[in-house]
Picture 1: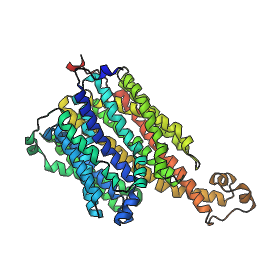
Picture 2: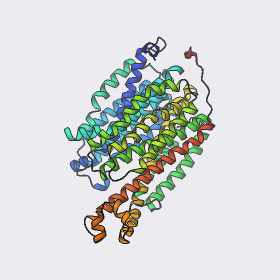
Picture 3: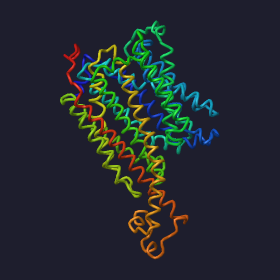
Picture 4: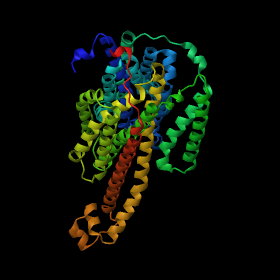
Length: 513
């Protein structure tokens, strides 16, 4: 496709540049989660945070983010698309400075909440802008730009975070947001189309529904975070999940009856949008799950540093970038249902191939699974986004975009909770089974564990030996990680069941001519 066909008279260079500015803001918000994750121990040591409180640095951000995402439609109507982006990116930048300047756990968490809420609106705002700023024929290109950056951020996050922490200090994990944040906020004033804020929209806000939504999403996030460690039936987790169920039912009932709902749930009555949300949820499981599992394996099994992990994981991003132009060309010519099915099938295969790792698996063995996942990702983003949002009326797109992106985040949260549950629950069982086999003189088990065969046959070592137990635990960890890979591969593949029920129609618009 020639550049002249992209930047044509109907969509000005100003519009494309304004959209690029919005994408930069979204990239910053997604990248922030990943770069901070690599340096949590450094931040913990610097601020004297208790080990059991360290994860709240991430959890506070994620809870605020998932609450903000479905509110994007309301905030867009209240402030206009341009107004929301300017307020959000400015707030995100100020909160980043606040995080860097924090000298206590309390102040850091407070700034992280503000940072997460403002960052949460940037993600769905970009995907909504695709359908609000561009005609049908250019939406695939715009979605590709947004999709590449949305997936590239968690891919390059570990290498960026590791490099910053090694080269500078943890403060720069937040300060890197300041310059692009300031430039984006000023650029948006000139580049994004002027919208008319509707301040009267604030009077329609249903505070009871808002409170129920906060209880629903925060209860789910905290419950999923604590479940793998405390147990799914522990009093705290059971109480949180029960609160989530009750508040979800109450929120749904109240919202469906509201004249001015906080979130327009009735959009889910559209079959394609509902299917798109299911696909987004499944993609979240596979995408967030794979980005989570690779560092776990490379750090705890292979002993790599954050910088080394980032270099290995960069393969997925490279494959994704190379495939993006092909995905755009095919998305405009091939039935979205077929491309979606092919993408999810290929992505599931890429996940499943990682379920055969050994204690010696490293860059070479991880290369092709990563390449396959990288090639598939764009086909898991472009066609489902078109199916979900491409045929909705423009007035519905902001709310729908929020729900669509929320489902991906919830899929990721649930997927990671299930992964931790598999690892924490299955690893001890696997270790016990391996120890039993060794005790019974199983030669194959000794080979897999890595015990020298001559030594094992001459005199089976005691399982209490200092050098044997870590070897058993390492193998058990590898096997449980493989089970987690297989689980997310099957869950992602299950999304294929809903694809045949989608309807695909070309939505003709006045701008398509």
